[in-house]
Image 1 (spheres, rainbow, N blue to C red):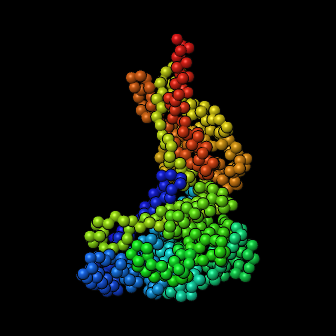
Image 2 (image 1 turned 90 degrees about the horizontal axis):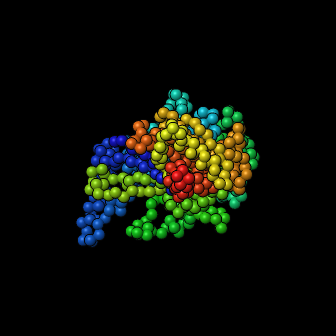
Image 3 (image 1 turned 30 degrees about the vertical axis):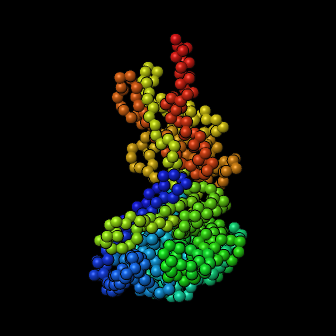
Length: 562
């Protein structure tokens, strides 16, 4: 059975990317290989048969008959069959993690890190700057995230730049405030002989602070635990006794933070049955499911928890490359995105905030009628942010709306010998005459990009456009506008690449040659988007000389010639 993963970039800068994960599951095959699951599957089928034979006209779905024992057996079977992982401890009354959902998050996180060299300025200039360290906040009884992070889904490959996959092992710290969760998670780590790669640590619950530059939340607790562990010491230095809260350098550095935050804001929400079928909610403890902010004026639940993580991230900033979180509701994603827009060090830079929609199917027998007829997709969301400076052509800032390409018909004559030169001249003239903006144009040859990465194809003639004030030799932004900030890419608020290529090499009967102009536009801020919309919206008519202004001008020229 093959695991399938696909990450599709968003079609607009305002909507999330799409992360699709498929984990094939055939109950019969799993039952034949895993006796525990075989026993639970028989019990499930008996329960369904009994209820569906009742005189009640209501038919009971598979999910309505699933209990914790079945979920635990299925989780164990899937983890071992696909990833070779053991999970002996999944106590009842605690959250049993859905494997496809967790795999989807881990697979997306891997892609995020792999893009460091192309998306983040520091990594592109200095090669591989990975620390090979990660944090899982709220690991639960399963420790499923760090376990998956050690598997072939994430770490066991040379994609991260190590020639020998055994020479550079990832290290993870998994924290929780629940002693029962820590005891259970430790058993699962030990069962897989991963004590040298995964550190499981009990931490105290820390209320978040309303002060944006002081860490008091869940990340601080994890960092305090990490600096006491030998596997996270910085260059062999002992930092465990340094308790200076305002000194970020006393903490180890990490490549990422991940978390599946508590969903509910109160105990009452957990106790309330589901609105649809009135079933009890998923087995979950109060520690796993509820986050009540210490500040009564602040949100609870996942919004409150991630807000506390944002507060902590403002203190640690570049000490962690990517801060990430799973999100259960789309409304929460929108709220968190809005909060990040005003965080100092990000200030609305779209390349520094990533959003994703996780899509995965429910797991049930591949051969069942329900599988054949059910196209329902389970959806969750994720968000990531960084304080690192991004490059100018970062894929998440690609503007996919508006004109993407257009064709210009050039009449070749004694005055116009080369059609490409003529189109290039028109582009340069247009950009130099844009009102209220001083633009810097570079006539060069470069490769086209595929989702922010060089395509590897032949280089094409390209007119690159940025604001003149950002074309300084040392790459330091010239801060002159209220929307400017020190973390903008070197190119400023936007980059426009206009690629020029001949569409037909032979002249037609009217001596015209068609030249295609393909646009790759990157807008890093809302201000940059407004500028490129203004600049690019008029391009087809201006360069093709087909808009009203040019029709009138050409008509006057013809009249003068007569």
